[in-house]
Every structure is written in C-alpha cells, then in structure tokens.
Image (cartoon, rainbow, N blue to C red; front, side):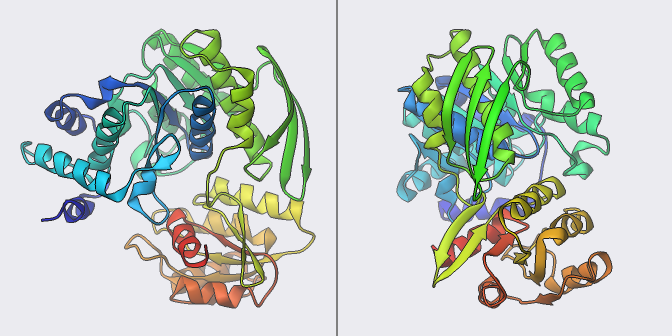
Amino acid sequence: MSDRSFLDSLEIIGIKLGLDQIRALCEQLDRPQDSFRSIVVAGTNGKGSVTAMVERGLRAAGYRTGRYTSPHLAHLEERFAIDGVSVPANVLDEVLGRVQSAATKLPAPSSYFEATTAAAFEIFRDGQVDVAVLEVGLGGRLDATNVVTPIAVAITAIDFDHQAYLGDTIEAIAREKAGVIKPDCLTVLAINPKAVREVVRATCEQQGASLVYAPDGVAIDARIVDGATTLSLTTPRGTHAGLSLALRGRHQIDNAVTAVRLLEELAASDRLSVPAGAIRSALADVEWPARLELIRWNGHEVLIDGAHNPAGAHALAWHLQETYDHRVPMVVGIMRDKNIGQMIQSLAPAASHFIFTASATGRASSPSDLVRAAAHIAPYVPAVEFARPSDALRHAVTLGQPAVVAGSLYLAGEIRADIS
C-alpha cells in the first residue's frame, strides 16, 4: 500500500473525536509536538483566516513558522506549510510513511485527521520550526490538535455547526471549543455572544489561563471600498494606523482585531517578540485563497468563497449586498451534514440565480435535493442544477457578474483548481 493510499483508506473511519489515539500515535513517533511552540486557533467561522494572519505576522517577526489547516482546497500538501510554503509532495510522502509505520503498531486504526495531524507535527519537527499555528479541525476539546500544550489560544466567532458532535446549544458548542484552553495559556476570544463569553471565561478561570476579550478597549476606524478594507486600530497596547486588509469582506475586520490582539499579547507577555511592523504585515501580506477571492477567468469575474455554514453564508451575502448594487448568480454546493435550509435562506437575498452542483466527495448533497430545497425556501430565486461544477460555472457566468462560488470549501477548491 502506498503512503497516500494508506491515508485514503482511513477516510472510511470518518469523524472520530477523542485524544487517546492521537496521543498513542504521537508516542510512537517520539512526541514530535513537543519540539516546537504551538498556537491553537479554534472557533466556528474565521479560524482559518486568523490562523493565516497570525502565522504571517510571526513569520514577519522573524520566526520560522509552521501552519496546519484543513481541509485543503486542491492538494493535500496545502494543509502543511513551513514559512508560508506548502510542503513538497515527496517530503509529505516520506512523512506519511513514518506515520503509517507508527499507526500499524497501535491496536486500533487512526482516523484520516489523526494521521494528517501527526504528519504535521513530524513535518514541523523535521523543518525545525520555532512556532506552529494550528487550526482546530472540529470542536476543540476532543480534536486531534488538542494533544499539544499551546502557549496561546485564539477562539474566533462561535456559531451553530456540527451539532451532532458538539451539542445543540451555543453553550455546549462553546464548551467544546474552549476545551483547547490549557493552564497558564494566553487566550484571546473574538467578539461573541454573552453566553459564549461566560463559558470561555469560566474555562479560563478553571485552567488558570489569562483571558483577553479582543474587542475590549479597541477603537476601529474602517473604510471599505469595492470590498477592500483599510482601517486604523487603537488597542490597549497601542495604535495601528492605515492598515490594509489583504482579505476582503467586512467580517475580516473582526478576524483582524483578533489576530492583532493575539500578536500584541504574545509580545506583551514575553512569550514571543512581535514588533508593530510584523503586525501590519499580518494583515496586509496574508494570503488565504477561496475566502472572497476574486479571480478573472476568460473575461469574467468569479468570486470564490468557502462559506460552508449559515453564518458564513450570511457573511458572504452581506458582503455581496454591500459591494454590488445588484443580485449575482451563485454556483452552490453544500455538504449533506450542514443546515441546507438555513444556508440557502442566508444566500438568497444576494442571489439572482442558484446554480446547484456537487463537489467530488461522498458528503455532498445532490444538486436535485438542493433545487427542491430552494424551491421551498426561496422560490423567487430561479434554480437549476448541473452535475459538474465546471458546467455550473460556465452557465453562471452567462447570467451576470461576478459569478459567485459558495457553499463548501471542497467545491471552492475544485472550481479554483479549474480556473486558476
């Protein structure tokens, strides 16, 4: 069995929460996660963007960085980056061979995410990174990334998602996300409802961790033109004037505040050295594809966004309504385990047409099911279906500009690979 086929064989296991297996796997690998400092980013929405911003800032501060995110858009190598560069395929294959050898010594098989997480730790140890920024996969308390002991944690906006695994109340979901907080750990919490703040505050008290609520004491002066944002921030630690956000959308302002406050507090607590110039670079120089990414393709504008839950869909629709004076055609594919009705409802106010399709994953809803759902939820938006995402996009660009791709990072990755 090849290294990649070993990893592919683990997909049948599906989502498996718990730390016993990843701990055992890391023990077999001689605890690679202890060879570097870690920062963990949890949350529902914005955690990928905050991970990318924080990593970029630390890199600008002179640290050798690792970045671990999921899922990937087109290639598995994207999940693992050193100094912002995805690991080469041959390096990943060699590390996966080690992970496979370690996994065969355990009494139970590892999950796909456990194996890739162990691979990330091995890659970062081999690469001699100073600090790794790790995006939580699902939840936090029982996520494989939670085997590390982080120097800091960021928790982004928390909303309803994966209720089957995390609970049916916002408090239950918040408790799972807050499970990444460890003793003496700096914790920065993004703007969140009071119920979330209370859960995170209680967890920090229990763990003896320091808590910074990112919006506290922060003054924001923002200007958005054609979806691009410039802002000035005054925080309890200083002033950052004339910042340009590389990532588009009003919702990125909150993500930027979270990243800035984390970087500032890392410096103020002497955990890491992060000068003001590095903080500026964190926002201006970050690259994070498929997040309101505008691409020119065959003379058309295509806006790709990985909005994959109702809150993400709402943020996308808000951006479209704020930026454009008309509704736009949307190529949409949604996973079966998402709240399809709420996602369609969130997108509908900005949609001129729905062109439903499915990415090449067994988790994808069928386009015909999405058409039926839309007919009930948003009958005023014309809806058609295409089996192939590429055909769906070709139809969408005939209906208006920009054509928007949304609903799933898997779909975003497939279309982006086709047109980039």
